[in-house]
Image 1 (cartoon, rainbow, N blue to C red):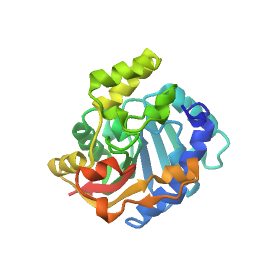
Image 2 (image 1 turned 90 degrees about the vertical axis):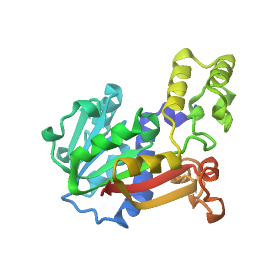
Image 3 (image 1 turned 135 degrees about the horizontal axis):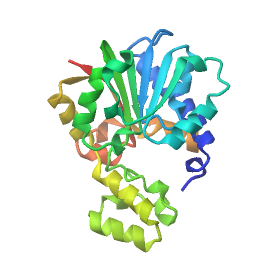
Image 4 (image 1 turned 45 degrees about the vertical axis):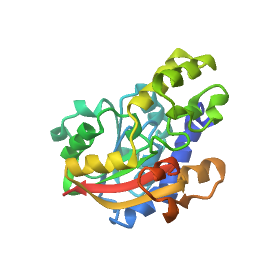
Length: 260
């Protein structure tokens, strides 16, 4: 496990830096973000991704079911000069009625989709919160990428072991136990395995629920890594951008989608 997984303020700052340098330019190439935008992030954690949008004067809302993360977010934003434009909600998105909040221009789902069961149901539900011309930004790692199992969260040497999460569930769980991972850690990692998603699987879901892809980028080196590890972000080379094969080398996908 890395320090940023414990130091939540550091993680908050890193999220904001990646969003400012990479996510906002990616979105802005498709839609001009203005200060009158209404933006919601689902699975916001401490809300670091929202900070650059708040700095721009946007009206932003962060939603997360983890109350401890929302409480951290409130502390981190306590002195922000535009904090009145920020709303933080501890709740499951399914328990929030779309009629109770203002329709939004942009929904952010970053490093969250891979944790959510029933992606089809989830994405269908999100459309209820969008304005007629609203967009959804998604950033997520395909399951088959080197650390798609989130094993970097492990306490043992397994935190540096790529691809072993692709083993059958029983063997995967047995290895985690043998290397001394806690029952709660094992449970969480097996849950990530259950909610895994591939690039092709994601595209099939979008077709079934009538979303269109407005923009996409696949990364060989995740933009996150530039902030975390000083590794320059790199897009996936065309030569390995082949269905199924690309899932093993794509460390993150960026998508902008909207309803057809």
